[in-house]
Amino acid sequence: MKQDRHLDRARRIATLATAMLLAVQACNPAWAGSREQARRLHDRLAGVPPTDTVLSQMAADIAANNATAAAQLAMANKNFYDVTLKNFVAPWTNVDRSVFVPLNDYTATVIGMVRDGIDFSTVLSADLLYVANTPGAPAYSAANNDHYQYLDDNNVDLQAALVPATQSSLLGIPAAAAAGVMTTRASAAAFFVAGTNRRMFRFTLINHLCRDMEQVQDSSLPPDRIRQDVSRSPGGDSRVFLNSCITCHAGMDPMDQAFAYYNFDATTGVLSYAPGAVQPKYLINSDNFKTGYVTTDDHWNNYWRKGANQVLGFDSNLTGAGTGAKSMGQELAQSDAFAQCQVEKVFRAMCFRDPGNAQDRQAVSTIKGNFKSGGYKMKQVFADAAIYCMGN
Image 1 (cartoon, rainbow, N blue to C red):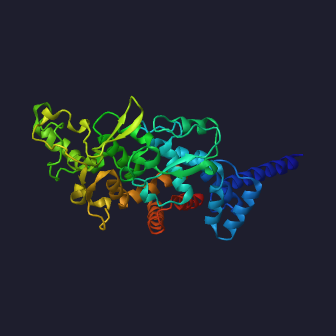
Image 2 (image 1 turned 90 degrees about the vertical axis):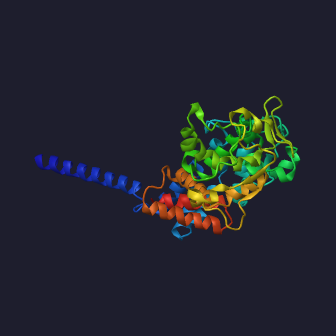
Image 3 (image 1 turned 30 degrees about the horizontal axis):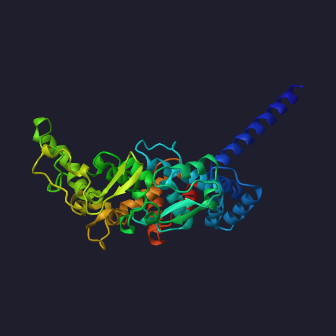
């Protein structure tokens, strides 16, 4: 009897040990088989379990050392567009950086660009807007979000429904004034409304170069383009300007002059563009410093090509100067910081963490290199990041 009890206890211990080993194997990619890796890859990209057929095909691709094909199959799932990408982009479209906002033309345009493999370095300059070809949906309106709210409310398959159009045809602005997602209605409502248009520049920097103004401060730049509304002696102390205000405004104000002709009319709900006419918001509070810079047009200069922010890696093939938001968007999106930012955001979305060690940083560098050399295809970035994190 006693011997039986010892035998039974030994069996229970062996069973428990086996269960623990299986649990460790399930959590450790080094032990995971192609089927487990396929499931993990699909979950990260689509956010839902794959069908048995899809799982088997993905597992076969992984076993054949073709994880990219497996990732592409996972991204064919509608939820990659309706959920993963929608939630990925939504925070870029509002000041609170909240994911809990309705679908809008900014988000839909990014989703369409990713689906269609459009060069993502044009996201800040293209005359492009994605709408849905969906029976029953209200037509796109430059004055409201009803079109996209309908798509949201009715769970329309964005992968199937979205079709490209132009901002110049739908928003009533010249093609030369269309500056990618910056001039979508949603972006204008969030960042051009009221204020001084500096908000648009700041959030474009946050969303697309992964830098807030505090991270690009530089007190060595000349203050000659800082507008009149910035006091040179806040609270009567000029040291505040010299040690704080100038560090942001000296670089920002020469760049956000590109938006001088844009505004969002909160009454009509429409993006306003007045070529040749500087918006009054650029000239407010002129008594703060009467000898400050007076904006007369939409000419911009990138002072960050010198000084500490050269590390952003601006393209030497561009001049660092131009007129209007489109050319300024090209300046930002052709920087190395732009490519780095997109890869880091996708890495975070696919790995549920920031790059945390030398191996992660090398992976980000490799993915960024492929992104730039491969024509800025965001879908490939998602695939590469998800594959890396499938095994890490």
